[in-house]
Length: 239
Image 1 (cartoon, rainbow, N blue to C red):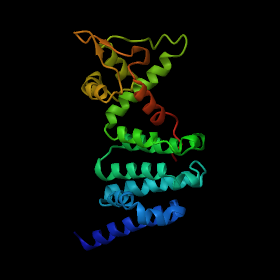
Image 2 (image 1 turned 90 degrees about the vertical axis):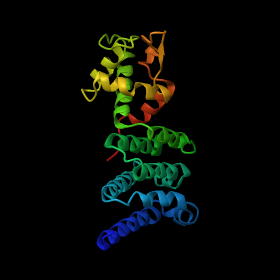
Image 3 (image 1 turned 60 degrees about the horizontal axis):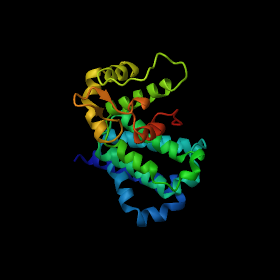
Image 4 (image 1 turned 120 degrees about the horizontal axis):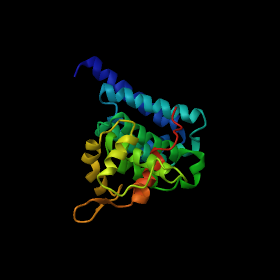
């Protein structure tokens, strides 16, 4: 490795660790250094390439700004939930080669979990669990879920005839693609359908010819799919 590049990478890693341990969560610096070595190591790995290094710095900056703006209470950052969520976020950056939609989804889960409105949930493991599920999805699959969530909300509105309940497996991909603002085609939706079914995020199909979708009353979203979308699809508090 080029010595200048090696020095730069080491400097960046040191900067990130210094910020995490001394500024972002100063009250737990000693604990993090002595008992959270694996968590810190996951953050360190996120700074090993220049692209990921830049994204990692940007994420740290966003978290710091949310803290400074009062969107993330200081006391939240010292909770096990916050540390595990940040560990998942930086581990994803280091190991998953995530796209922009994927990273935004993970950051939204963290931001919602950290909000004052969710203080009663700070001891819950739900955000970490949802992050681990989210890490198994790609940007197109997240777009499909988002389109389903939006369609479902409009479908539930009284008198909204433009969003009827759909039970046809043939019509469903077309409706999803249309509601994605042309980000998807029906063929792309079809391509990812089976994985979303296997992950229990959307319902399967009925009948021998698989012509009817399950859970048409929720535009196919399962309870788990709805729960995930409530975290990643609500208005963001990100900077």
